[in-house]
Length: 509
Image 1 (spheres, rainbow, N blue to C red):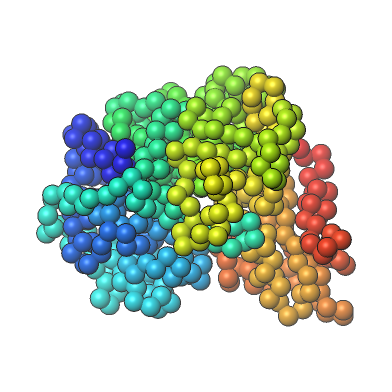
Image 2 (cartoon, rainbow, N blue to C red):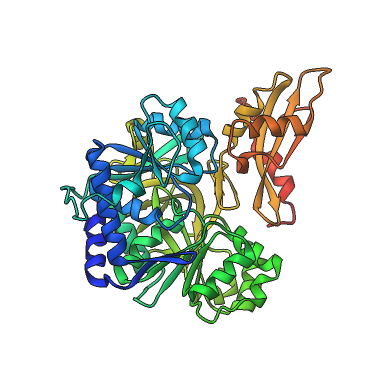
């Protein structure tokens, strides 16, 4: 199955039904289909061709889904850019992928122009009126474009998405998915998490370029509606559940914690809500128990990663009723092979810790333009190394015990220590740096730095945080930076982050 065929079949079957809602506006399946055809024809008319990389700098909105479908139909490879990243990070992504076209929201025009100044030959295509010199207004152009599907020939192995994630060393990794793997992601969600119908509504508040966006295609295939919010705030989100009569929601644990802490979770009208899906980071057990008490057996957890989205394992609503399983991330998805191995690939025994490996139709094609990194991550027989450590119990449930990458998950966003450490080391007085995750009631983990400085020198926490803020996304800025006498090192000189991290978590896990 091809992802683009799912779009075509959904449009043909559910044409007059509502497909996308945003604020006071809505689009039917037929309207989204025609809009995406027109947009695809505009892109083709601008000279964009099959396999070309097209950057997307778009916040959640009415046109986010039609733009994605236009990319599918024109055969291009979309490169979504997190709007929270710095211009330096976004420019690096565009340059590395060779993107020469950037579709951006009109409200992001200033950033788009900055990127055009950083990336040679970058053409700007705006979703709305623009003042940028030589920029194209896609919404204006599409009115005069053909409404017919361009029917560009594509194959299951054709790339359709390059989505950036950080590497274990902090380097950017470009995960590439294909027409076939993206269709398989939709099938994975339908087989393991939800079974929508034409009356179903998924409420989206998290960015559609991340896990939230993977729910669009399965709901489209079954006639369900995507109700899209600009962003997340507790009261506004739960008002959206009531307003759109949402039947399913998908949130990261930080968002669920905010709903509980604000009191909004107790006073909201959730009569339409059937399922509360969460993932992207571990959920504190006390929060799980609070939600079960307030909302009953509606919780479903998934564990996955960008390389193999969405569900490697699932902890379903029935599993949540067993207190012994609430620290688990669930049982392997029915369409995934999951194994725990030692470093050399040998399987470990039940109860022993090993690295999680997965083999499934929804796994990535590989890393874009990085064959050596792909070879390090994907074995010759197709197993993807997740770099996560876990153990199976005797019932086949998986429990994560650590991340080999030392990755920090703060508010559902991944932060890799070395990336932040390298910026801290740019300060002329800093001689050493280590970054770990500390417990945080709101964000689950808070980015926390430790630095050593030159003898007799001094540096303030404020200036170090500002240094990072100027070069990286806001969620990567340490909440605290501590000046210490020494950074703990292993006998071979590697930073022992665990020696700094573990004392912060005493009594918390």
